[in-house]
Image (cartoon, rainbow, N blue to C red; front, side):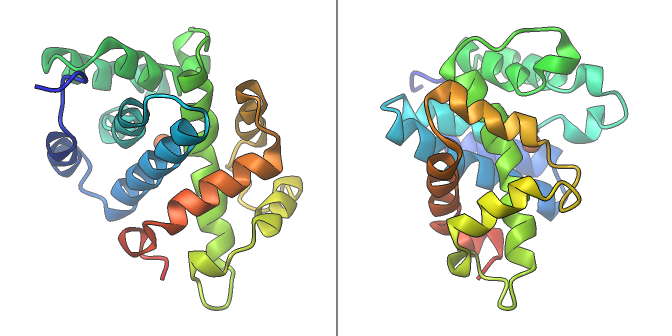
Length: 190
Ligand SMILES: [Fe+2]
């Protein structure tokens, strides 16, 4: 076993088991890519950040009607598998507001801002005529940040947690957009 308590292959199998909706799985893959890109840029543990991103919404179906359990059910599943505590803590941190916990580490801010911006990036891509993520300019994403009626469910304040990573918004957008563009086929945005 690796240092993380779970291999990516097995993490993907868990996603297949718990998240049957295609769009949810894509969201998890997008978050994985973003986390990997952020870890690389910030000289952090890429594999650990990526696994946290990939698995962060594993209990979505089970907890969608009770947000105060979102992350806790995943924590239990992963604890039983012996997944590394830092990954589990990061997953809980993405729902810190509803769990009454505090974000303290870079990975906590990254997973929160990172998973949130995936929504804004997908929404922006889908209004491009060709719906290709590779056509999207970082500037368009930054512009949409200010249009609160656009993708109104995407929390701008969570995205702004990127500043806790020492990344200004345009820089953060750039990293996340490029990371998602690398897996454009998996995301169906080609
Ligand atoms: Fe998510």
